[in-house]
Length: 509
Image 1: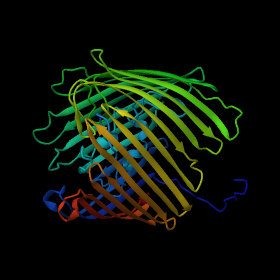
Image 2: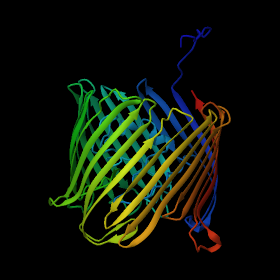
Image 3: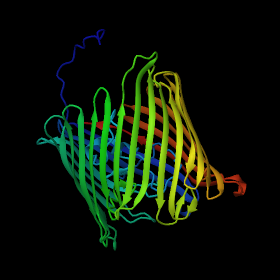
Image 4: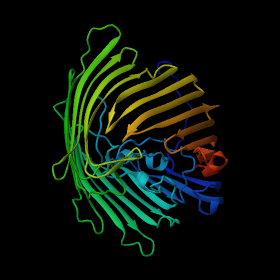
């Protein structure tokens, strides 16, 4: 900035009406076994509107919304008995999404017992996406976010259209939050999903809650919430509550968490990975900066997690001990040991193998190295080995990132799991490669290829983006999901294939 010039010669400028309209047109060719009637051609159009109601309050409207240009999800290998969390990737929902945050919290530099991947009262992925992660048609929607009258406000309403596999639904979200002393805040949220198709108007799910986040004594944080859900016919415990306290100073890092999730707590427009449990978490660690060559910081720590069902029966116990070494170049070496107990109250499927009820006690050792991300070549490597329920598991995962120039970035990832469960030996592997190429400031290309060995699916996603005018784009997107299991006729079956062209144009007033 010391070398920045002075801009002169600008006169009679006006702010405008803070109104932007972005119409779009799409044309798609669809095919594959997962498509109704084998697919076909489709042409559609819609628009987005953005209006600055005030300098701190923004209204967004959308009609016949299309997300064809969004990158596909990263595949995951599920070796647990709980649901996996997939993050939101659609721009409309990502913009100002922090306003709608009501979740378990993880904060940088603090060791906490949970995160938003464990619980979110509102998770926008539930809108316009089926449980199989396939798109559902959105008719229209609106969002109002910003600050007004001392409050941070968020209002969202989305209406989906009828789909062969899903009725039309309306989604409404209200979020209010107010800052109090320092960096502390309190808030409320209400979420409603209501069936709007004929004969489905009695189908609803509602969630509501109160939360607070406080910073005390300079180094302490306190987070808490109380939430509940309501839906027809549910008589079980529909409440959830959490209290978390964490402390970090120049040497010590300590936290504790208490959490209750009722067996009937079901935020259908949110995410919760585990119901009908009470959780206790505690950790103590230190992060001194000793005078050791090439070492910036040491972080020995011990974590404990206990999950019991609502009757008080212990279901999970995790005792973790670890040591992280942060080097001066930014790389991190982590050594870990985990002692774990799992009680299965019923016959349960784990990694595709059904295990009988009972208690399972096992332990695992691990080592991980993360290279500095500030270099042209970086990455991470992790190895773990130990027991796994009534068998064992060896896992190797890694990621390699290459940035040979500011035009090109390459990312390669691999995960190999060698498992034995109930006398069955098998592998669960996952491979992916991503290439990002910026030909110029107006032309971009992305290629993303994934192979999930546990499902025998090969997923490819190619996207060309041309910026033909400011904030106006041309997208050409090809996405394919293919079953490549051995023995499949002709070696592969196309489950889903979509070729889409999309053109957007920003018109500002």
